[in-house]
Image (cartoon, rainbow, N blue to C red):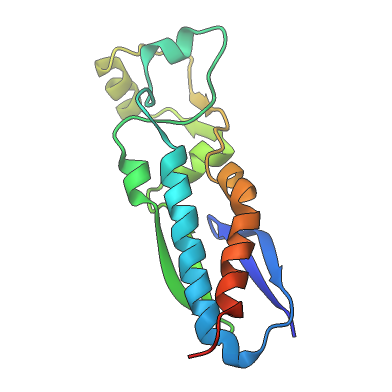
Length: 168
């Protein structure tokens, strides 16, 4: 029997890791491996978020070239990343990710409509939008998937090592 462990972000399946030769009595070991893999990814995600910079700054709107990497300004995104054990289809699962609403807009980019409240806030912060500006385009700044892709071999190895440990 083989088991497929799926990787999800913002409610969508985005990848998976397949574990071969799985036996039901190895579920406690799988749970341990999933927990360890979750902690591994959580740690690597937090390390990947750079300190300094970030946020909407006046210069962002006037630069000719942009640095699309995500920089941490307050540390809220980094602090919101956690892993949580669960159960899916009778098998252990682990959910890893942030719990702040703006995480997905950083990962995938998007367009945000400008409200009057936002316009006043940006003006207060020194960013003066034209009256004709009705939306702000946020570029993609992937920070989640590059880490998961880079760590996929270690994720599989961590889970496989736990499964291969003696029972008990």
